[in-house]
Image 1 (cartoon, rainbow over the protein chains, first blue to last red):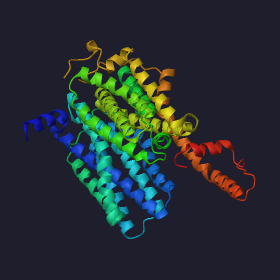
Image 2 (image 1 turned 180 degrees about the vertical axis):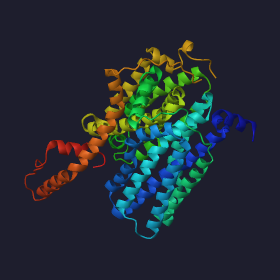
Image 3 (image 1 turned 30 degrees about the vertical axis):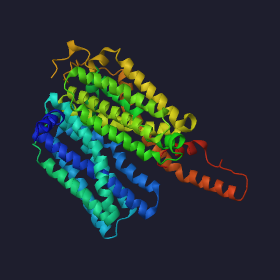
Image 4 (image 1 turned 90 degrees about the vertical axis):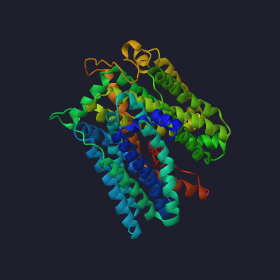
Length: 420
Length: 81
């Protein structure tokens, strides 16, 4: 390995030196690739059978709906029991449902309602896996490598949107859906194997004999009474609502300003994904508190202004560049906000904090997409992108006036211990 | 780099706490409500639209008022219906 490679790996892949985190990261990478590959396989299969976009949407919704229900339960479980066991179950369930679909599809017995039902099962397992893996990441590396660990996880999340469908799509096109399900099952099996290599860790503290609801409310009050934690989670919620719920606006924006139809939508999404991937990796190399704070402010402001810039563009290549800028800023901001949140939360609360994030952020994005979709007729996609971007950039700048905000951005040295 | 002195404050159920909980849960409830509501009335709205299209085809005055406005709005808002 050359000196440069070693230096880059040491800086941007520092968390990978910890065996448990490395195993979790690889497991997560294969799980994400499998999940995206599965979305593509299911979509192609349903559309070929029915030519109904609505049914494709129903399968995708069935896979996403559990994200609104499962996290509170799993968050409490992740604080009560060994997180590796929960992850093992989620990978096992996803492997099994892929294999069942493979055999049913190969035998010609797979019907659309079954695919939608299996999508729901896949969604339940994913809704359990995501917060558990996030809570676990934070406990596998020392605090100085936490931002790096979460940035590696985030880059995997963005990269897998390219890699999973990139591998599975030609397989489905060339050999049919059963081979697509087989490829996804292989991804999940590899991930499962890496999960089994994680060390077993007992929960940090016993939650006693309280019920689920009491435990979950305990998690809510834990966040609420901590000003920095509360501030960060609320700001992330606002960020997701105002700058990350753009999917429903982009097809209309493409139609209104770029290509005269919705064909620019895919290109814009690729721009967002590419920017997010690069920024996630970059954030992992930040080493000081002040640099983290500065990048976080810049990412927050750019997350809003990127949307404003996008709203002014009228040429596809320029719009794609603005979308990449927007994606980079959003991913950078979200990775840092997760790092701040998980670094403050005590290990026995991390499952609940991660689940609250999953629930809140997913919910606000779904609702704001609905809201934007219904308002674009009145205000136009361009106007909504512009104003929501301006409002979020202003909120970030105003948050610098608050004492808690300055603490989050690393501008209250007396309250922060020595930098790494 | 990520050391924060986040001193907990005493916990009390205040309007602020209720607003905090609502901020995290209300969007989920709203999104689920819109989806379920649209799912329940989608057939009725689609049937009214089909009747309206048919009437237009026969050059008869369009009549899509046979279904309540809120139902049409609900289906219009939901991206999956």
